[in-house]
Image (spheres, rainbow, N blue to C red):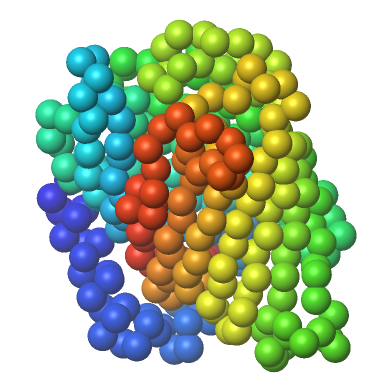
Length: 285
């Protein structure tokens, strides 16, 4: 773990010292650098990132005391395309803070599989799992599989070339209405089953203001009110700098839990400080 942390910090340092250009202008891929295609997959088939993150988790312990746990560490992401836009995505977490107040339900791994298409007027669909998948055996992996989300979404481009919101050719608004379905859902601890057949309707919007600068947000609607849990948001929001090219350093902030509109009851404490800050170094094969 210490060696991996040192290597990660070294990569960040080299990236920053070279003005966010690891090789050339950052458009090269690992395949270009090594003059090789991996496993007959070809270029742009394997993507990933190493991310340093920080967020504050606020929760109530068994005695109803409010606990603020600061989670920080590294997140390792890997995406592999196996047919056109069909992908397998894996995300692993390495926590550096092992304080005794660390919630046991924090996940070590997220995973998903599906067709992810960013192009205009296209559908994406698949399965995503953000349950407390842990390597210590405290949660059953197959039980957690039943609690993932099946989803479908549609990609819309909101700006034409004449729009006043289009500052240059990089400016664009991406709108994505979606439907999510969960066969089985549990309490926040991922233990007690609270219900079945949960459906969520919503839409996500990302406005790329200029070059790599963006702001984004999503709204959610729960057709079955009883399925809406205290941590389920009415909306989410975020912003950052994102460059899709290889060997780039990206920064982002996102707040995804328990945000409620003023007219809805807020059942959990959540404010700007509970969002997640990230700095990620990306690569593409």
